[in-house]
Length: 375
Image (spheres, rainbow, N blue to C red):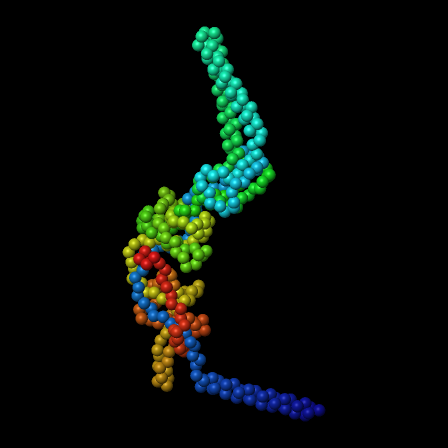
């Protein structure tokens, strides 16, 4: 019995050894085949590292704000009896927008006007009698006082009626109304927003250390995601008189012409303000730059000689220090030199030493953003 178990165990071990040996031979064959196989060649697009001169500028973000803007409301309460505007309409200063019911005040006004007419007649008669010494001076004074009293009442009622008529305080564009005919509103309730859109302000912040480079009248360029590719020109018109004590930023205000009303208060925008002068920089397309927590890098294309003496094109990942971006380009502070070739498309499939084939036939052409010279 023991011999059978022993022979069975030896047979199993022998079979396992044969299988392991076959697998080892297969793996060695695969490794040898892989070593002899040619390296895969990846197709990429490239660009040269070039020297350029960039106008000195500062970038920030901000929001548009109307030169004049208000949420309109009435001074008194009442029932809406008339709406004289369309949502989103352009209005002129003084245009009637909304009326509240004034039937009670108008009836009281008619009564007060009648009393004023009577008081005026009594005053004129008393004045004539006083001239002939038929009445004492006290009666004339009383008649004059009564006339002034009822005239003041008439003016008060007319002012009350006027307060129930909402008129545009300035020229601008209306928003969407918040009230309807027959609705009772309280004084101060929002009726509609009115914004003056041309010109329009943009408010933005910059660090306090840049204050010495700022002056009213400097040119600014503004871009917003609402209009991709469109650039709005303006100028710096105001610098706040104080620096924020918490953030140490200074608030700035630019002014832009907005004849077509494209820009609206509250819109987010990117602002570029030009200091004047130029800097010489090395530039590469933004698509060549890999940003990561451990640093920025690019793939540089190199020509190397292989073990068999043949030349091959490979890439080397190189860490760089990037500067500011302008348009589709970014400046390089260190890590590259003029004339280097960097990969701009297809880099996601590369690693150090990868063989590549350069094909720039379909590569898009990057562009610089407008500057004072070319905007």
